Image (tube, rainbow, N blue to C red):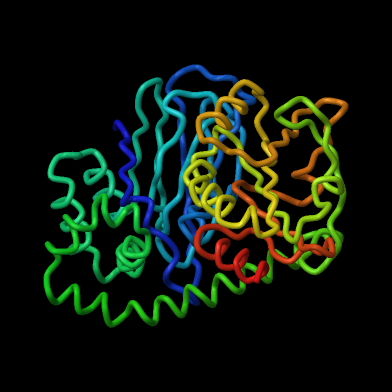
Length: 350
């Protein structure tokens, strides 16, 4: 199967809470010879689409095979990948039961539960895209994961314009009414889960870099070749935004227009943005800075004597990741993006 990741497929996510968890097994085979030390990664789509794909498990290939086992309380969207292979990965819907995956040199074949089977057919056919989405929604509208599919679609402006105009009008009036009735309740659930996640993340964050704690100083190489310290950068600034990113990180680059606009709007009001790249390739780093006209301070965390592992220092486990530091040197917010980041910056600079 040739996987074509369509934007709308990224909208499947958590929506059903409190059910009994049931076991699933992913049994994988690798058709072509491959190093036994190669790792297979299992990643789950973040609760918010901007959170990317947090890694939840990994296993080593043994004798051309690998197995993942776990429990879930509802079908959800995951990504499975082998580092260094082509194709590099596939998306799949994990349901209770057994899912079989075969990696070959050119294709990835997936078979599993009923939603996954239709998902495969739907992904493979790129013709009449809107009709395929409507079919998928109509067939599985009673699945909360599919209703979430639509709710999240409506919340993302760049995807609304790309696909939603061709999909939503084709849904039956009955389905539209069903979605409208449940949307408010879904939004409340989502907010509660996001708040719980933030509390859990703060709890698992080392105390030294939690919100409300003083910032930790560091030094690193800047894009002009000089070595800068955060303590020097902060002088005279009302607010500092640390933006952890990399040129190879698609979610980072999608968020970059927001960072660029925030910088333009607030740089004269006391904001300083500090880009902290996790790139290992300096050339790719500098090209991305130039291409995207990222005119604020840019630092890199390559493993050289002058640099420190800033991402480890600030407990950054996934990117993009932001930290806000106020004029007193206190960490006032973490992990904000999109409109939430903009609103927080505006509020802190009033």
